[in-house]
Image 1 (cartoon, helix red, strand yellow):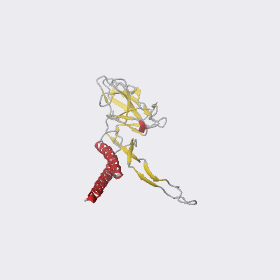
Image 2: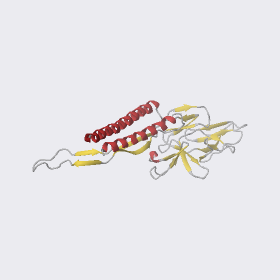
Image 3: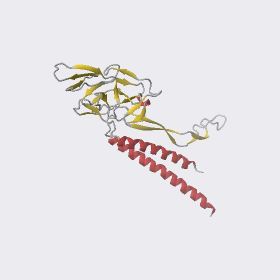
Image 4: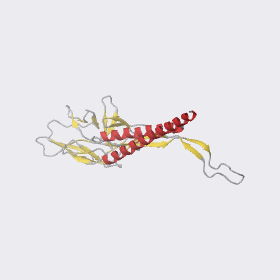
Length: 262
């Protein structure tokens, strides 16, 4: 059986992974805080018919070998944490991180998760939560009848209540960093969870220890660039077509060989 059939099939599978990744990027082009992914590949092992340096006489050696590659495989879907554009919303609970860092949230079961989506709200108890009701950690509770909420670049949260002249500090937002953000596990819903590959979370005040500062009234948009994604989509499609053509050509060559008996 011709090896090209199997080699081309690995190429089709690899391009399918790239197209699937690109499709997910495009689908989330308007998702707040979304970080795009990139498919990465490496070549498979080689079938060696002759090693380079094989002796051809007492004094000469072959300068090159004969090695036939067996295809390609997907090695990683790498998450790219480049910063997206900031969009002004004038919503006092919309917060964007300009630079490195994640917001820490708590799931109902107590699991700590991390997010770049800073579109926050307050629940029935005045606690600052995300759109799914997961609490921001450290927990911050906004007093009833608050007329103004101010969030500083260092995460300091102050409020003004009726009858008051000066603002009162009610808490401070902290952000979290990882030595290898690409090693975080994606849970969906703009949430990530730490893994052995990501390293331990390092919490600090925004603007300190290499962390980015906060911008109140802004959200960070997706870092997906449509022009780049559409180019990758075309490239993946053409490569998929080319590999399918190899299978068709190999099949025709086998058919020709079978017809030699006739």
